[in-house]
Each structure stands twice: as structure tokens, then as C-alpha cells.
Image 1 (spheres, rainbow, N blue to C red):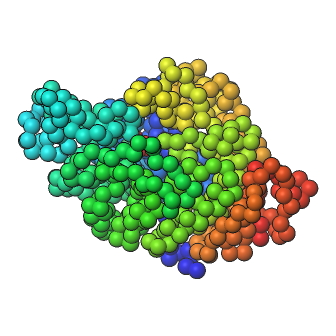
Image 2 (tube, rainbow, N blue to C red; image 1 turned 90 degrees about the vertical axis):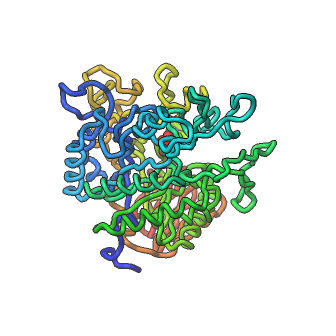
Image 3 (cartoon, rainbow, N blue to C red; image 1 turned 180 degrees about the vertical axis):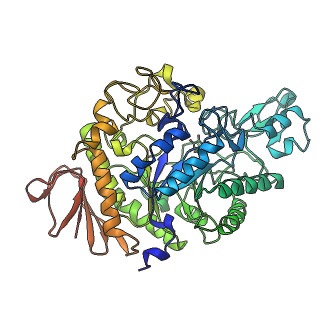
Length: 531
Ligand code: GLC
């Protein structure tokens, strides 16, 4: 066992994801009052809430200058703040306040693509094909007669082709929205620019970076067509049987050199600066490559996001995740919700059952070794909201007609009985995504006074995590016994009942449970820690 003091802070940290547009709208009257969009002063004002919740750090989604086509993941200036969110002075105040409260701050870095409003892309559009300005992006001639067909068959993640044609006939690559042109990382100027960006924020005092689309920076050099199976590849029961897709646009070996360079930069600063990769790799083995000792510190482990409510499936994802990072000598990370996926109470069925299951899954996650990432609003038990079509904002909605990700991005309810529920803006106004009419009982103020609330449960669970597991590296194993998931960590057993019938409560001292334990039983959809 390693002594807590010797461990870098991120290794067991609970990190709270702040989706800046939807956390709190704090800019004072006269500036943007009533714009209904969250901002940096809003976060700073609510930092004591995060301290009281019991998290160790916050990760803030992009607040840089941006036309907001993908709500900040389309960056026009990597070292400045969008006026929508405040100023550089607001960043400094946020960092100082957070550090004063003992909270670390991770910021988002978006290196795969810029906004089409970035000075580099504007210069590329103004320059001729073959110019150095265009060489920072991936411009290619089209195929077919007059080059009217895109250069290859790749699709955008947000739907439709991954290529857009400019007036002189050339096409540029965008794996996301048209407004998010992909950078060409084979051009050394790009790597140099991002090293400057990294240093800029490290100098300002951030504790780490969340690296957006970390697996995407390099594309296979020939930009060949993607081979598509006639039938879409099925996700089989285990990774081993899984049919891997042909992905010439993702996870190329060259990307690891970027992270070696960044690691050298991070290590040259005092205070355990870190980076966590958002890498949607196809196998656990390729995920582990991002966290080799000379690369990034952590990678999000998205396995649980796609795991159904099942003791067996949970046991598998827990054991596989622990095994995958052990090979890289790192620690696992755990995620049940984020700003890109359906909220976990809804995934588990919604309503009281979905919430009970979500609390049980969360309590299980918080007992696991490594670090846990929480997404704002999960501590309130918020569900995915069915945002009306006219209010939807996700670029993928505009490109595909699918509901998209707005339903997990609805601004938080802080207090009061009607929108904007203390989020900010004039009384009676709706924030940038409208809030439901029935959120009164879910607000922070309503839940703080209620010992049975989900908020009280999260506070209690985070305190218990610190008390029971702080800095410990015990071997951890998950076992599925029919519908019971049993995770053994040191002298603690975490038991989750994923079945339909109450199970006998194992002997021992109950440390915490995710719901009531009537008559010495563990009811369905409930988890408990027992010593
Ligand atoms: C990441 C972000 C997502 C964004 C995309 C493009 O997946 O999490 O929100 O749309 O990258 O930057």
C-alpha cells in the first residue's frame, strides 16, 4: 500500500465535470444578464457547493473564444476566453478560489480540430490550394468528374460526409461539424502551436487537461477509404469476439508521439499536472497505450457507458477495466455519465427504478480503485430531458435529425419553483436549453434540506469513499453470482442487487447503502458497502 502523501492527487480523485454553459449563469447585470448561458463567474460563485459535495477537482468544458457551433468544442482562439463566459481575469479568479478551497481544476483541450473561425482556417480559406496556410488542415482535391465527389468515403461523427467543398473546388476534412476543420498533425506547426497552448494554461495555474478526441489527431496518411462491412459489426459478448471496424481515421500509432511530448511539458511543471484522454478506442489494449508511463496520466474508461443493467455485465466491465490499466501501471477511471451520452438514471430505465439503479451503480463505482468522473446534475438525480425539437441545439441534430445530446445538457436547477430555478437570468426566463416545469423538487436548495435526497446521498457517499478507501491500492475483484454483483476490495464487500427479488444482506457492518435496507435484506436495485 502506498502512503496517501506519496500519491499524485489525480490517482484517486473524484472529478466533477462542469459543462460551462449549463452550470450557473453568474455574470452580473449589465453585461450578459439574462443570456441564460452559464459562465466562469457562475462557476466561481458555486465552488463552495462543489467543496461541500466532497469532490477533489473539477473539469471545465471549453470556455475559449468560439462561435459555439459545437458549444465550445469549436475553438477560434485557444488562449482567450469567449466573452459569453467572462474574461481571463475570471479564469484567474476561478483558479485562485478553487485552489483556496482545496479543489484542483482541469481544463479542456481541443487539438483535433479548430473552429472555422480560427485565424488559421480563415487564412487557409483566403490562400490558394497547395499554400502553407492550407497545409495546417487537411485539404484535398475531390474525386470523380470535376472533383465533385469527396476525397474519400468517411462520414462525420455528427452525420453526413466528413468533407466540405470550398469555392475553388478543394475539399477539407471535418470528422465532426463542417465548422470544425481537422488539423493536419503531420505539419510540425500544429504541434508547436499546441505546446504553446499547453504552456499558456499551465503558466496560468491549471492542474491538468482533458484531451478532446485524443485518438483522432492523426489519420492514416493515405486517407484511403474506410472498408465498411455489408452488415454493421456487431458488439459481441466479449472484447475477444468483437469484430473490429476498419478505422483509418482513428487511433493511428503516430499520435502517441504527441502525448510523449506533452508529458515532457507537464512533467516540467511542479505540482502533479496531469492529462486525461478522451480516447474512444476499439480495444482495452489500445486504450492502455495512451497511459503508458511516458504518455498521458489517465484515459476515460467508457466501458460502463454501454453496459446494460446486469450483474454479469458490470462484473465484466469492472474486471476488464482494472486488468487493462494494470498492464500500463496506471489506475482506472470510471464514468457513468457525461455531456455526450444519455444520463444514467434514464439508461437504467428512468423513473424511481432508474434512479435507484443509478444510485446503486454510482455507489459501486465510488468504491472502485482509481478515479471517478461525475457529470454535473447526476448528484441531483437528473434524468435525460426530452428537449422539444424547436429548442434543440446539438449540431448532430441539425445534421441527422436525431435528438442528439441536448437532453443531458439542460441547465442545473439551483433553487425556486420555476425556471430558471436560480440558474441565473431574469425571473421567469428560460436558459439556453429550456428546463422542465417539474424540476422544483430536484433543485439543490430543495435537496439540501432532505436527508433522503440524491444530493445528500452523493455527499454521504463521497465522504464514505474518503474515509474507507483513501489512498489504498488493494486488489479488487468483481464476481457475478446470478443477479448479485459482489466486488471485493480489501476488507470491504460491495454488493449490488441487479435482480427482481430481495437478497439476504451479507453479515458485517453496513458502511453505506444506496437506498433503504428493510428487514436485513438487500432490495432490488440497491447497493451496499459492507465490512
Ligand atoms: C468530444 C466532445 C464532444 C464534442 C466532440 C468534438 O467527443 O466530448 O462534446 O462534440 O468531441 O469536439
